[in-house]
Length: 358
Ligand code: IPM
Ligand code: MN
Image: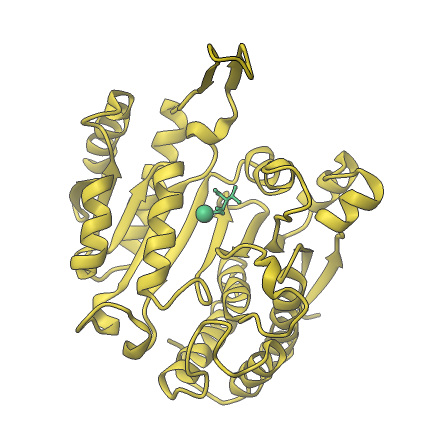
């Protein structure tokens, strides 16, 4: 019997359904090539479903989703709906309530011409950001006092727990070790101004002693954004808090060619985990067949790697890399001249080619 994986699919809003459709075509094709099966269950959650039913992510569906092997998500967000309602009701709920404490965001330049930085080559842009995914200002401990008056006070607490900081730092050390290469882990924080981040400083040093083979580096978030543009080759593995990771990885996505390629995994090792493009729902491109599906396709690759199908994952990654290097897919924006389905088709044809795994 071939191995079978249960995948919950939430295409979501805007361009989500279009790019996920291409991701699923690629998933099915590599599954048949590599000899495993993906049993997908589609979930309708997102703006249209909310407007029709007032449902965001009902408990029953949540627990059903939580019992599968992995989740593939397109994008959530719609201008017709109150800011943050669906983002928090769907994405953040899944991250928090499934305790997906690692947000893994690889930053890899596949072809020199895609990089907006002068003289940077694929070897210079190849790092991974480990973003804490369950704490910080995202925890939602907020309030308004005297709302709407001239005396209004608005607060939102930044929270870090010892347990939360330690587990994500440990994951990052393990990853730096596993990546081989330079075996270097950079802690990115703002401990000079946000003194609560002293917790990160101490835990980083403590856990680091268990990984003598991994060299430790540090940068404040403001400097890290500068290095990201000036000397991205200095980074190998980066660990940071939730909000800094959010910001840093949009910048990092640009140096790997843009949001058209950047994918991420929301992971709790050993448990159901969620994979998604970093880009949003881009409502203005929705339904036009112009959105680039490569980020969703790369999310499928990350998901397969997580599920233990590393050959299938590498097959997708190598195919995408080759299509970019050869300029069969000339650029990563909506202006590539290729439709969403055409790009999907090119990847489908490319994964058929026999290749040495990356
Ligand atoms: C991301 C997104 C989300 C975040 C939003 C949609 C809440 O920007 O996945 O990076 O801030 O985490
Ligand atoms: Mn973001």
